[in-house]
Structures are given as structure tokens and as C-alpha cells.
Amino acid sequence: MVKCEFTDESEENTVPKPVLAIVGRPNVGKSTIFNRIVGERIAIVEDKPGVTRDRIYSSGEWLQHEFYIIDTGGIEIGDEPLLEQMRYQAELAIEEADVICFAVNGREGLTAADEEVVQILHRSKKPVVVAVNKMDDPSMHEKLYEFYSLGIGDVFPVSGSHGLGLGDLLDQVASYFPADEEDPYDEDTIRMSLIGRPNVGKSSLVNAILGEERVIVSDIPGTTRDAIDTPFTKDDQDYVVIDTAGMRKRGKVYESTEKYSVLRALKAIERSDVVLAVINAEEGIIEQDKKIAGYAHEAGRAIVIVVNKWDAVEKDDKTMKEFEEKIRDEFQYLDYAPVIFLSAKTKRRIQHLLPAVKEVSESHNMRVKTHVLNDVIVDAVTMNPTPTDHGGRRLRINYATQVSVGPPTFVLFVNDPDLLHFSYRRYLENKIRAAFGFAGTPIHIIARKKSD
Image (cartoon, rainbow, N blue to C red; front, side):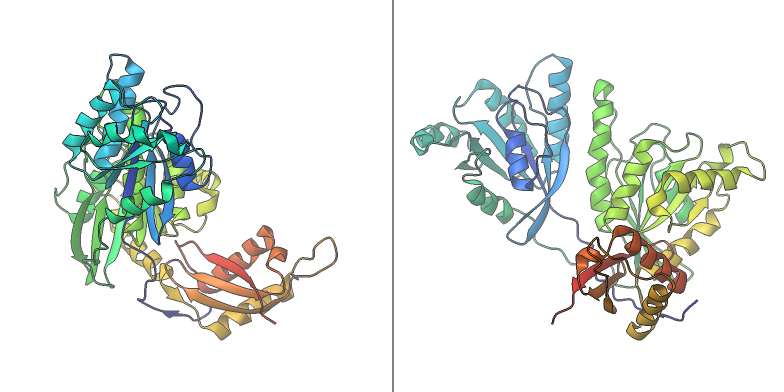
């Protein structure tokens, strides 16, 4: 193992992004506005009421403000299960949002259904901007006045399909975003969050870590309603454990509310140095486990995979090895993450968790000396020469340096960044890991053209 140095200098952003929710009755163009702000056609757009069935999350950016944006199903007051479900989804999105964009159809004018939605918005006590959509023709702007009578927020004529008026709308939205708060914890504190689908035992695990009943524990999925910060100290190391909120179970809307937990998990991940991706050993690995862990990987956080409820599994001397092999097969993108088997209920093997958390946190903030890094890169290229393109041009790596931590990020100065194929990038990552460790943390490798 090559000698390296550590730094406490974390360069990641641990302040969660604000949230904008777009709500309104069906067929007013919410998904079109969402797609225009995000810049991609993520939401399904069809000229039929009720097409958007679930909230869809993405990130947006305006005037140096980064934020989450939620596209909701339409709100419509009625007895039909689908409409009731979409109404409830929208209420959940409103509850989570910092700012609400209330979309209405300018061509149709104010409707009774719009006024029903307004009642929900009034109760939310959240700042609201009104997007009067489908106002492509300036001569239609006289219809705006009836929407001012709602008295819930500033009114903006927009065209989601053409992007008209959205700049003014987003200016107002950004003015309502909460001011950046200072991180309440010092830089030596390790912030860790627990993510996972409902009923994997996240709250029980928090209690096991803390050694006391600090969080309500129940067999009912979704007992945890809000993210809870709990600071504690163990072996002279300060930690904060963030228990992500679950979701409420309410009849037929339970399935859709699973998606509601995604946004809160994302916000908790943003505030974390280390993420514990919790799996239920009794139920095994399902697709949702992989999706949830993928959020932490994409966010560049250090990760420990925790297999909980290990006490409930019938096992022999091969069971743990076989289960870990299955994890490695299913979570191939997390091959760097350690796996800890434990039982929060009986506290068996719980003593292995915090040492793993501390190790991956150190890896997440590890900084490598430039000359040592370049020695490793030179050795790697000597063992496996850089690739060439179809024209015979070969990738030339002139110089490498680490530019940040949390996660460790390396820049390679090369003759042509397009020549750094994925497979060779992966090869270099493996060589860097072999030299320096970096257990539990993703590594980012960026290729830049060497300036003449």
C-alpha cells in the first residue's frame, strides 16, 4: 500500500437543495413546464387528463440556485380512486416543498377545480407562484386578472411548450428559496444517514447505534415521519446520524407514497458524509434496494452496505459468503463499498459498524500527493498501454493531480479527452484503489485537454 496523507478538508456540499413542487389540476401543462425547467423530457407528456401518475423528481438550476423540482399528478376533488390518489400525492409534494408553483390553464380560465386546489394551497402556508400556462399569444394576457383574485401568490403568464415567461417565474421562485444555513456541525463530525426501503429496520439500527430508544420503532412501514438528526460521540469521534423519513401508509395510495420517500432520502444523502444503505436480510435484495443505493453513489457519498435482520436468517458457514457474493453481483457499481452483516434487534455484530463508517469517511477525505499519484499512473500505463482510436491516435496522459475530496476527484491532463474510453478509466480507477485503498468511497476521474 502506497503511503498517503489524510485531510479533514471536505469540499462537498452538505446543505440540502430547496424543493419546488408544480401542482395543479390535470391537463394544465405541469409536465411540460417541468420538462422545460429541467431541460429534458423526463415526464410523460400527453394531452389527456391524469397522464402523470406519480411525482417525478429531478434537479433544476436557475441563477446559481440548485433545487429539486417535483412534477405531480393533477389534483382533482372526486371519489375516483385515481383522482384521490393523485390528490394525495400532490398534498405530499406540497408538504415537502419550500416553494409551490400552481399551474393553471390560461385558455380555459379559472375553474371550480382550480379553486378547490387553492384551498389546499392556502392550508399549506407555503409561498406560491401562479403559472398561467398556454399563454402563447400576448393578446390573451387580459385573462390573467381573474387569477389575481385567488390571492395566493404572484401571477405569471407562461408557455411551457415554448418556454415563454419561465425566466420571470423562476426569478420569483428563487427569491422564496430559504437562505443558505450554516452547517451546525464542525468539520470533524462524521455525518451519516440511513437509507433503504420501508421496514428494513433503519430506526431500530439508529437505536442500536446509540444504545438507547431514541427513535420510534414499529413493524409498520413508514413509522418515521421526519428526518431526525441525532448527534453522539463514540471513542472520541463525533457523529451525527440522520434517520431518513419513511412514508405514511394510507390505503391504496401506499404504493405511490413509496416514491415520496425518495426525495427525503436524497436530501438526507446531500447532508451526509457517509450513507448506510440498509438491506433486509429476510427479504433479500430487490430492485428498489439498488435504486436507493444508486442515489448515494451518484451523489458521490461514501457508502457502507448494511445487511440488517441477519439474526432471522437460517445460515451455515457459507451463508454470509454467498449473500455477499449476491450483493456484489447485484450492486456491481458499489464494488468498493464494505458489507456489514448485523442485527439491530439483538445488537449482534453491531460493533463492526462504526469502525467501518470511520474508515470510509477517512477514505472519502483522503488526499494523495501529486508525485505519488503520477508514479502510480505511469506504472499503470507501462503495464497496460493507453488505447488508440480507429485512426491510430493514442491517448497520452501528461499529468495527473487530485483536485478535491469528498469524493476523491482526479484530473488527468491528456492530449484528447475523447480518447479516454470507459474501460481504461475503470482500469485506472482500479489501479488507484489498489495503491491507496479508498474503501467505501466512489472515485471521480476527469480528463482535460492539456493546454498548448
